[in-house]
Length: 108
Length: 498
Image (cartoon, rainbow over the protein chains, first blue to last red):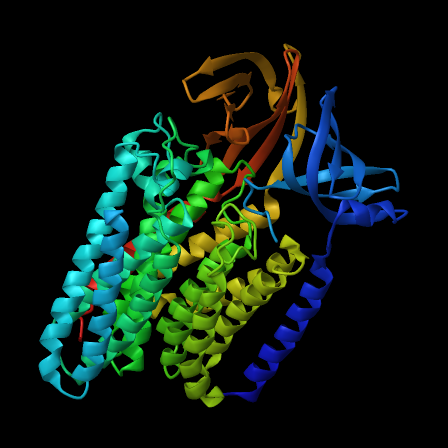
């Protein structure tokens, strides 16, 4: 077996691990957000509460056992547990994507 | 409760059969009795399945599993498929598949020491899974009978889901046979091809279901459970492309099957595939570790050729992402940046050797699958569009025409009609009492693009739709079909050696 192939294999694996390291994000809870000034492209896990729909936008709260944060999403949401990806400006969580339980991208 | 007793007897018979197969490795006179015990175990397992099926068909809601997965309004075909909609029933199906595969294997061809040894290993695996089924019992009763059940998750009520789990579980049973036979010195290509075909059908049906049902415009979401099902498939695919390290990949396939069982059944992940928390989930992790032993003992790096390295890299990339997903969110970009280049190298290799290839149809299928997958992963366009009633949107001339609501007993169906330059879209949202609303997508297929609309939000005056333009998805389906046809044609030329 050529040494070059093994070398390429290990270099590729090193690059893959580097890519993985930069492609993961931690799963936050609403309580974690309340102590942060801002955060971008994060995933948050919680329960949807008090949904209000106006002009195609859904306004709601995402809560955990201790705290809740305001959230807004272009589209419809329904109550229940969700994982949402978006940006936090210190007051409102702007949901870009909802990974609900019925979604294949829903991860742990 | 007769169902549980049947399962218990089946487990006892299978365990006894394992013991007698073990004794047969020293003295072949025990082989007949171990075989009879195996067939009896299979019969009792089948009885269990039929009794559970009867509970589903007769709406016996005193059975907890039936209550959770069935409803009176469900059609008979979905009542049958509800049998494998939860962890208890699906494990029962898997056990039946294991025993059936073992029975066919032992009954076919000569019975020598190698085969008896393979049967001992196979029956050890089957008996272990049967014992786990006793603790994940699908025959638990509830003290009172409900008038109606909760019902199967509506996302699973599709034709694909009738066939997807049986193919996957029979594929898993065949992978267990691949492991056992290789560990006993039987290298039978016929068994490996059969396992590969079953797994491929299962994966393709799963992808087709995800595309039509989940409303996110893709066929492969790099969901940890999807990935976990890809790992045994990749291991078996590697098996066909390597010369010296075949055993390594044969063993690896079963290790990944048990890894899949662990992540779907332990409750460590929450996904549409996950059956919820099972206190015995970590038993699968213990089996996973035990099955690793032959891999560690027989692994020789000098046996690895460039194909082995390429497939190993694919497997490692998918495994790392799946494993990382147990603790953190992994972005899809990771897979696109790492897996796609490897897939490209594999396709270059195929094109280079296609002229002399014995499996031209299969490899042509892989090339089409690659073109389709890469097109969807990198060039799919997605737009969220707000449509006011009777005022169009310029691009594609979308026009929200009307909406209607129908009731069919179990659910309310909201249907909207959207005209466009491409054609008429009629996406729906189904509202259930017990379940989250289910979006039914509307797809217009053309040779180069699928136009795909999912209804996101609605009111009397406006709707919000998710619109996808999915390029060359047809290549994914045609490529997969060609791969299967090529594999089946190839399997016809191979004679079983066992």
